[in-house]
Structure formats: C-alpha cells, structure tokens
Length: 197
Image (cartoon, rainbow, N blue to C red; front, side, top):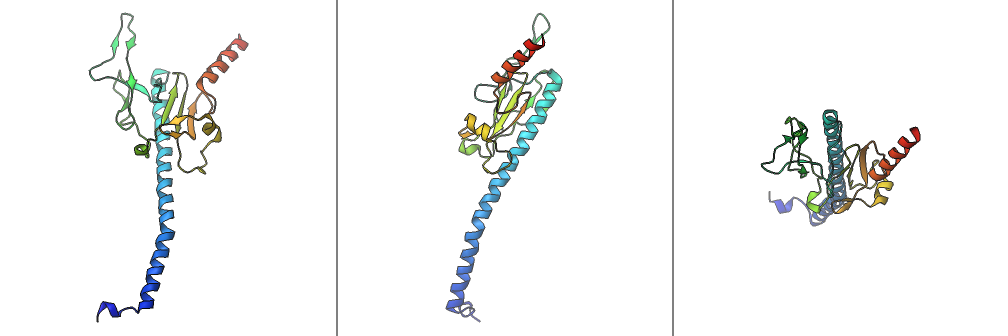
C-alpha cells in the first residue's frame, strides 16, 4: 500500500490543521514554563545566598561589604593573601566577587560557604543579582520575569534599583526591611540609640 493513499486530501488538510492548532496552543505554555523555571532558579539562588551570608555572619559577626555595582566584596586579587598587622588584626583587601565565577569563602580559614556564587539565569540578557551591605545589614535583590509572582514587590520596583539591565522587583534582607535603604536603616538605628541614652 502506498503512503499517499493513506489519507484523502481533505483528511490530510484536517490533520495538518489539528497539528498547527496544537503547536499554536503549546508554544505559549512552553515559553511560560521556561519563565517559571528561571524564576524558581532565582528563588533557590536567593535562598542559597542568604544561607551562605548567615554562615559568614556566624563566623565574623558581620556581613561582607558590597561593591558599588552590587557584588559581594569577598574575593582576592590573584596572589593576594590575608595577613596580620602589628596588632594581630587580619588585613584582607577584598575585591568584588563575580557572579558564576568566584566562590564565596572565608579568606582566612578557607571555609567554603558557596563553591560558586550563582548568577541570574537571564545573565546573557544583562540581568544580575544585586547585593547591598554596610557590614551590619544587607539587602539582596533580583528580577523575577513573572510580574505576577507572589514575591514581586511594587515598593522595590518603585525604588528603581538596577539588577543589571533590569529593574529589581524582589528582595531579601537582614536587619533592614525592604523598601528602606541601608542609609535610612542606619539613621533609624542612630535615632533609636539616642532615644535610649
């Protein structure tokens, strides 16, 4: 039996039409599932970074500082090593850690908090995580692609913070509630200290 005799011309057209309809319906769902997967990676990454920062804090009773472009200041230039000054204090000259390139480690003991700092899954489009810290508190931001995700916060969006080429819309913090800035939190802490004195 020849293949061309399997279907009549009208049956072939109907089958092609059905396949086209299935493809048109499936593509948007597939694209949405990829977006949801990238947003879940962001949730997981933020949780992992928060956990690593908590471990770091338990060791040093401080958080690593942040660079002006929102990176964790905890890496060293090639060849640099921590050393003790004449008072016995450790001297570390940190540089910004690169997302997806550098580990997050205790530069004195070598303890690894994260083997590699994660990067935003949409990094090729310029998206990035943003870390802001003064050592006593921190804020960590990202951009969820799904604008209806439960974590998306209009107050963060209104700040207009840059997560790479995107506007940050979700965040985690320690000792400084978002959407306050670290400066506002510091001013509030100083004012509260004055009132208690």
